[in-house]
Amino acid sequence: MRKGSIAALLGLALIAGGVATAVALVPTWLPEDASQQAGRIAFTFWFVIAICIFIFAIVAAVMVYAVVKFRVREDDFEDGPPIHGHTGLEITWTIIPFVLVTSIAIVSAIVLSRNDAQAKDTLRVDVTAQQFEFTFSYPDAGNVTSPVLMLPKGRSVELYMRSLDVIHSVFVPEFSVKEDIVPGLVTQLHVTPTRLGTFPLECTELCGLGHSLMRSQAVVMEPAAFNSWLKKQEKGAAPSTTTSTTSTTSSTTPISPAQAGLMVFNQNGCSACHTLSAANATGKVGPDLDNLVSYARTAKQPLESFVHHSIVDPDAYIQPGYSKGVMPTNFGQVLTKEQLDHLVTFLVQSAQKSGNK
Ligand code: CUA
Image (cartoon, rainbow, N blue to C red):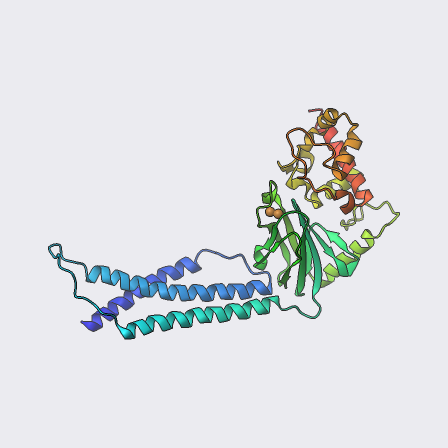
């Protein structure tokens, strides 16, 4: 009789535990790890899940067993016998959760402290967030800036993050790490990439109209490739008198100013907010750049200088139906004069092509 009950409970626990394990393991819940931190966080996650499945199996088994076995007969209206506690049972259900919760706390504390531990050769990257773009700069390499987070594989990286306006938050799911960027503070985020590739980097704090479009990428490269990229950028960032096109292209074939302008457009996140058929951009936050010709007419300005002004001083003239203070006002400083000229050429040409709408 007693043996039968234990066997039944055990069977039920195995079934419940098996179902819960399948739900945990069969769908791919987490993205594939791409950083040391992600591996440790995944370990913590699965450690907690295993404990949860263990507890769930016990609770589900006892509950189902009790419902079936102690079901009241239809004509039975009597109360059950009174129970006055059970010291052994109470000690058991206090000690087991205490041990489990304490072990989770210890594992988490170890993972947190390891994840934040910087190596000696930690690479510093400064992150500037604003509505609605990220800018990454490398202070140890002549303040090279990039709209994409370029990282060497296997090296410890510390991000120092500032916001120019509201609260943003940076998250790369494959890295498993996330941190808010708060105006007035410099927040830090440590990551050691372990896998080559391009991963989505997104803002995860509702920060205004363009929040859902505030996205960039983290590109993890071989250290040698990263260093040569940095060197090339460093040269490109220095004021030069050459008429080379944008510095991020490694191609040696000459490209037209309009093509260079398209690259500037794509690399600076313009498509997040603007529609422009020449760039396959479909952003809806700011004015539709296919209509630049008619906007310039409304503003009573020549097309080219209108486009130029609208980039460097976006709040000076606001197209009816749009708001001040949405477009970043620092493109005049972020872009080199050459990049700005290319961008203007590209926008003017594609606006003229898309007709006098
Ligand atoms: Cu920045 Cu959301």
